[in-house]
Image (cartoon, rainbow, N blue to C red; front, side, top):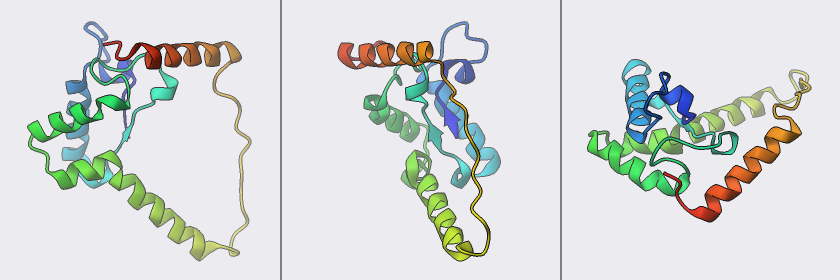
Length: 136
């Protein structure tokens, strides 16, 4: 999954992250492992600000346009934007049905990732982003 966290998109952080760098990551991964294994995981709910021109889902049409500009096919774009994850989840469900009753159900206890203060900051910043429109 290609994440939109600015520090992952642009590791040197000098100029900030931009949508073209996200596309570079998508293409890099797709060329190496095949686009049927690539998806996006924006992490909009876990970051204060996204890459320039890709700060929320309202910017996805621009993302799609730029992917088309880079000559990715509509089929590849459909896969990356959600088709792959839907396919994989379908495969997981099929295996789940096959194994139902054959193996015990296992579960882990998962600790909270964010402190209350961090949750408050993320909520405030998300609300601010939504109410002010695009921040980039």
